[in-house]
Image (tube, rainbow, N blue to C red):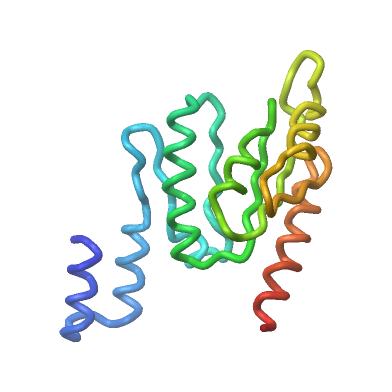
Length: 158
């Protein structure tokens, strides 16, 4: 059964709203080719959006995942996006250049050589020319979440 069938059953009063909601939740996984499955309705069910862990993914795979996720964010009219990135930290700039909402970059302490412990990711994000990108300190997901909540709360008051 696909989403259209669930909606038709609901429209014809063959299932209840609560049954339709449960069935729709089952169809919330979007597969990106053969390398990623994204829970596109997690925010609706759990109150927090999907998290993508892209370790060991190739650059082309990551681009496809980002594109898929960003399409869902646009549909959901999100107020802010948090991007955590290690190594050279380029992901935050890429995402910021693709959306029209604020992006909060969280450099992570993954890395090696001169830029180890998140120094390269932090420097990269701070030097980004992508408009709408703000950056918190290395591994400061709590700070990013707090800022994101403030942005979302401000938007909801209007």
